[in-house]
Length: 285
Length: 130
Image 1 (tube, rainbow over the protein chains, first blue to last red):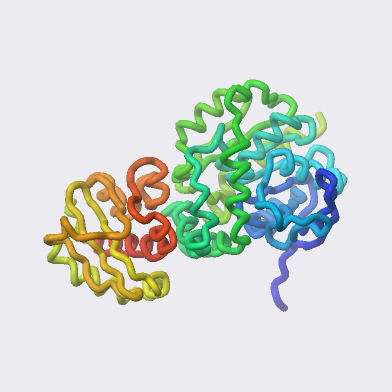
Image 2 (cartoon, chains in turn purple, cyan):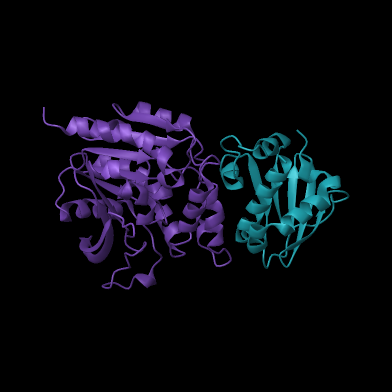
């Protein structure tokens, strides 16, 4: 008998900012809903280990969607999207997650996101603290460092660049089999998408002067950052944690920017205490 | 720690190892460029012709032209070449973001052949620690 994943795949039609999108999502498990956001230029595959982990899906209803233009979520049919450069904005990606949660009938789900998704975790905690019971920002930051956009979308630079670059966005200690698959996944997005996503990452996410407004009594904030993440230092995240009253921060030793897919077993050792704490806090007193 | 790939005595050994590596052969196909690797004040030029490394030149190379260069201090390369490098020294891109390495010259060519360059440097690390 062949082994079958517990994951269910579906499409849902969401209207975001007046435009309808046919959105692909994957779902697994029962319990507290946890919505997962993929990184720039990525897709649902990034969270496949979470969707398949028996311990996690026995307690959590795990939901992962491809943002429009990513993976199996195509561009919309109702607009001439090809006449403008693809660009992800903060308002769009926040509205997307709110609409996905509403359409699935969730009440205060948990939100987890890696890299770009980690940035979104903090933006959601700031702007919509009553819509989520907790956010987990993986490799999040106050703001991005130096922009490195042009290399991601240039007629002379092929997708092999993304393969090579992503390999070194995972830790040298992570298993090669996972690092190689993650660098393969980086090549799967359409050429303009990674650069377009990084518009939000580099230009729109900036919590400078706003962190004091994040109310962790309404939405708990957890930060997980990889020791090897070249895009930010652990010292930077320690400072960010100090600025968000009540936030909790854990350095993920031996991990880098890719988070779960570069070493799922090690990542889980950092994630489980957070998930257990959220369940404990969610129980009626 | 002496950086082995910059030593002229090791040039042919390193060149043969690159040309024999299965992943490097795929990554470097079509590549015809001269790549300067600078370790502090010492440099070598790795010459690619149609995906084959024809020469690693580190003697009398000071006036040789090149297409793009990867530059770092000797200390940075020593960290990069460790079996498990410390954070911010494990990859050239991350090292550039943190200011530990510099990419100069025709950077578009460098990024279009980034897979070949990064695989080459990984092989240099493997040979450094053999």
